[in-house]
Image (cartoon, rainbow, N blue to C red; front, side, top):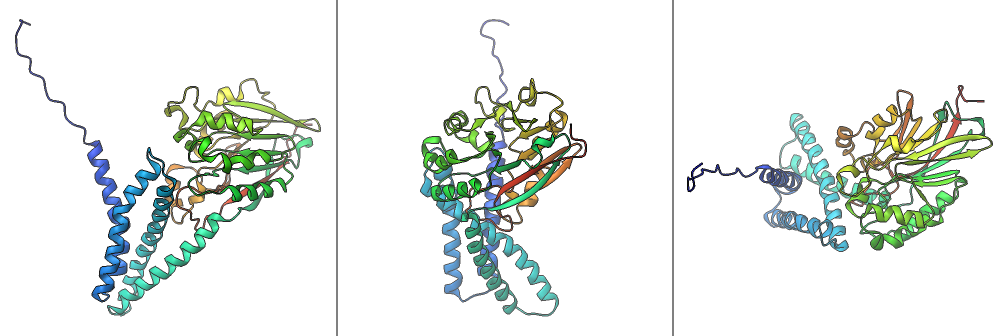
Length: 396
């Protein structure tokens, strides 16, 4: 090419992905806020002052919501903004769901001859009342100490000495913007009353750093277990400081199973308790963190039964390939707010409970705490007590 020869450079096309993402977010917000607004104010044909007041409330909420979520969950991490934004998100989800169902009822009422405005006003009142009742009940369910859910699990390779071993599962405590230090202490009192041999925490301890949530997490140091207290990371640790939580749990007397295993023994019977990092760890940028089942089971006696801690149920495929007997997971919250579990099911193989995947069993907890909106609707929290039973093919 001769010196001075002009070079034609094709201009780079700007990526449309940010624009499309922004448009999608705006559309979702308009739908979430717009359907309840239309159902409760416009369609009901209330007197003008009532409609104007309702419209103003929804407009303020719609404008405030993105700012609250940015201030609360963005770089500034304002707990006050996070609390307000999370509550608003929960309320608008409840209103959206029941406005949708209310409009289905509107069609049925129209079909049987109920005329407007009586029809639309009945729907609006019904949606408001049901939403208020569910929000109140759902808040109480979220803030209460979880009930104990008792499950017997038969593990074929389990030795007779460990028959009846008691495993308590905690997960998704999500210590966060709402100070739940007292709730945490009362929850641990319940755990200690279960006389567990093994206590597990399968991640999502907190939203925030150790320094921010130290007081809320402190009662975890008082957990009693006859054989082992074990912990693995969840995806939310990687939004804050994963290694910090791993180190802190060690100072509280827990064994972080960071892609490794331990062997517990009782009356001559042994059990491998292994743990892997969350599936999101590999893309988190935290050095040395990724889910590695091979490393977790390296050196384990292949004749022994394996109890695996893995935060997300969808890590079950790797557990099956590794010959795990029982995997314990959380992450789903059981959907937390009905009918969100249908969306969870698109991402996870199981939403809650005991399931079988070939020879491997999976128990998925609905979670001990909650994330974001302080509501639990038709998805109660739980402290899980799993009693391990030796199967017919147990070793002598």
